Every structure is written in structure tokens, then in C-alpha cells.
Amino acid sequence: MKKIVPLLAIAALLSGCATVSYQTATPLPGETLSVHQTLSKYEGTVDMPCRFRTAQCPNQCDHGGKYAKFTVVEYTGYEKPGKYGDEKQAEFLVRIAHKDGTPDTETPEALRKVIDTLEPGQVVGLDWTHVYVTQGGVSAPERIVTRLAE
Image 1: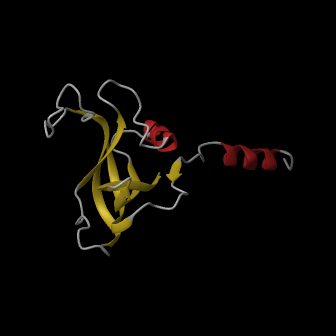
Image 2 (image 1 turned 30 degrees about the vertical axis):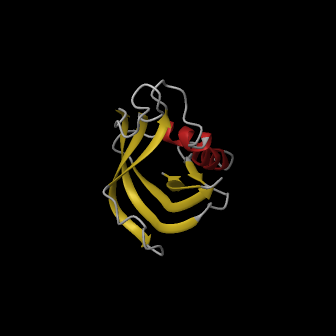
């Protein structure tokens, strides 16, 4: 009996204890406009068409694609240090592929892999930061996922 107890303890530790999470380790670029910490429900993926906002649309633009959709269940933290930061959101989308099906390389591969493991209806910790980035003389807002965890 004494030999079985340690085996059962090891089996319990190895079974069903795997969790998948993503957290960015790199410093965020630009000025922080708002920080969103949420519990959100993964709704699955949706195909979004081009919204026809530039002269290159729809044939020569890079708009639209496949997005992971999350509905915010509740906020666990929120800050708005920048005047132009986003208000609290009801949903959040993460682009995972271009409209031609190729992976969106602006979304880190590790984040895309975590999203692939999620099941629709699953509630996860989802945090993102709204930043204003200036690169090469061009300034634009970005919403960067900083954490996604089961």
C-alpha cells in the first residue's frame, strides 16, 4: 500500500493540470493610453470583411481576415492615463489570420497557439494595453494583448 500512494500522487499531478497561457515579456512601445484587465468569454473565430476605408480597398488592402472574438464578462482592472485611451469595452478582437488565410505575423505566434487551444464559451483572463506608437514618422494606435490565461 505504501508503494501505491506515491504513484497515485504522481499520477494526480500529471493528469489534467496543464494550463495554457500567454504573457508578453517585451516592453510596450509608445505612450500608454489605457490598460484593460478582464475576464472574458471566448466566442470562437469570426471572418471579418474589408470595411472599405481606403482607396486600396478591397482588392489591394490588408484589411479583414480571421479574428478571435472575446466578450468581456467583467473588468478586474482598468486605467486610463492617456487622454485618448479607450473606454471600457464590451468585446475585443484579436486578428489571427489575413483574409487569404496566412497567419497574421503582427500577432505573436505564442498568442495564436494559445487561442487555438481555447473552446468557445471558455472564460479566460484577457488583458490588453492601448498604446500610441510612433515609428518612422508614422503614428498610430495599437491594442496589444499582454496576457491571455485560462
